[in-house]
Image (tube, helix red, strand yellow):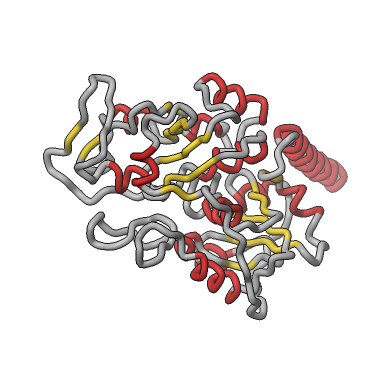
Length: 333
């Protein structure tokens, strides 16, 4: 006698669950209107049959093994950046550089991508953690610097967005035969400390600090010897460009408003920095879509700048903060 009511209940539950997923995906699609560099799970799913689509999972290998988007390859975020070491003892969590310590090692990235089977004709979707993380949008930012023509980032917490949309995962690893990858690095995109120092008085340059307010004022040193910000820099915490719930990027009109309120406008050269050029990856992707054509990344960021003695720092009190008990500077994750 209870079979029919139970069936009706199960159907109702399934219907409600499906409706919730559809509405969530509709909201995501509405949120994404106007973005090209940020895509939804649904948009990725609809393109799975495209032979030129290449999905790159940039999480750690063990996370990839537990379940990934079908067809994705794995190039963990750690392989795109140098090791985390103390300044003066080797490279930090910046781009790989040549022996001069200034020039990005493009050949190293060509080797990394070629060994993974990446080709220039691939339409790439990167996913992992949320935007602004080393295992999130940083590889997408690097691919843009390398001149890859079609790169997008799965907005939000990659697999969480995928599961929320109701799509199945795969536990079968995918590897591709090696390729010959030839990059076309974009000139002027990567700045070093000397570039910054030469442009401190340049009115056509705006230094965009993507860190937290406490880091900006020098209250939070992040283990650096000194604290504060680059003189004249403007603050817009990268987290302010994300929703509070699922860490997806805000609509373009809202991001644009936040930037313009701080006089971060397309008519200037915008130089992004944080602690280790990690959080900058979110606004870098957003500004590309918003029509900013002159955007640079200060690669060493405060990891180097605040640990040198010849770099001026500013704080609300006009001085600089110094760490009484220096510790190892913290790299962005």
